[in-house]
Image (tube, rainbow, N blue to C red; front, top):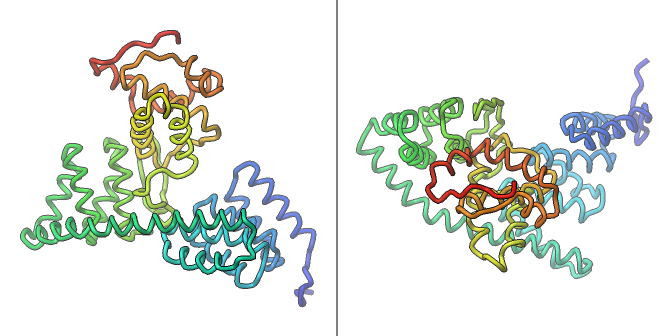
Length: 362
């Protein structure tokens, strides 16, 4: 006999609890796909279980499935499931990740009109609103610049029927500057030949790693949401473009925290130093994406970046001294520096720099 669900009665309640337990265990191990599966299974037993819904939204965030997170958080808000401000926070983060800034501003403006909110909650969402307004302004500034490039590309396409083919040749055979210029123009050309060329560039083993990330961003801008293959620095993966964030916004978290820590440590003695470090960190970010290393302790990465920046600037430096500044073992700095060096070929680049000075005290 088939068992049926009646009203709020939950069949097999122990299976529901077991799925929640397994989901939490998987999250602790950072196995988010497994956690997602168990949360979704739990909701099949009890569709209105708040713990499963909240856990699934958080897990969607970990998997960068922001569309799914938005949809589920919106359902929770509509039906009053969970603590309102906690769910609203997740909902707003999902919208921001998908660049729905106008909607975020509209929602938070209405929310903040309720004077019953606590001071801490009000301050938090006020800060989010102000950040979102800045993002809107930044995007509007970008929009005012884009038409100039769009007009130039359109004029060249009208004047030369083979212009797309010329750009493709530059992309696949040109030097770094020609490839960069090709990508910058191709991101405004909604044509299958352009899309195919950019996708093909992602699997070229000799392609520059930073330019490959720019190509990913261009495909994202062209509205391509399919899964593509990428080969970068000996690594391969299938990349779902629908899950790629807006890379033109720069660093995400916790990468931004690494740059912030260096600025905090160096600003008073050398306000310009953090700018050089940020440029090197951005290069590493774009060269690594989407194979970004796990940043479990920002102090180790900040120290390694500090050390690398000093060396690139030709300054005598020691791992021990910088490790002490960030209160970490020098071995931790060494491991993170190895990742920077392997990706950016820092040692080789410094050998070619006439300003390079050997380390002391390593």
